[in-house]
Amino acid sequence: MSYVVVARYRTEESEEDTVLALLDTMAAASRKEPGNLAYRVHQGTEDPRSILLYEEYRSAADFTAHCAAPHFQEIVLDKIVPLLESRDVLRCAPRPEVRV
Image (cartoon, rainbow, N blue to C red; front, top):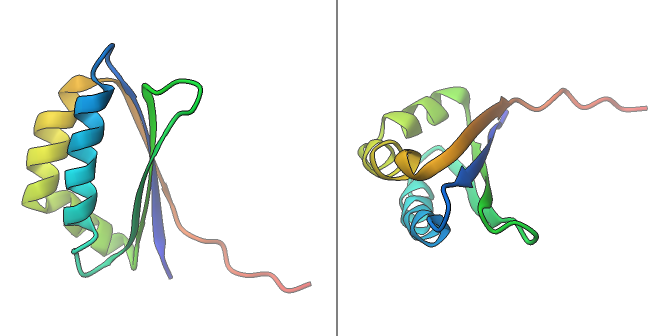
């Protein structure tokens, strides 16, 4: 079973370039984590200050380990979060397949 995280960020005025550069660094480090299956950064086409992250992990425990990783603490919590206007994180587990 995989575990998906969708994070929506809205950057403060004129901070999107800084946040996107930091997210590129974060994505590269996160993709090396043993439980990471995907880490994709998307930027709004109509509003470039809107950023969506799609992250997929093998399990909820792998996501917990991701949040405890030094690169998460240093990049996301210390550097990115202070530059955001808003941050919403949605954690999801897949529903069992239903065959009709």
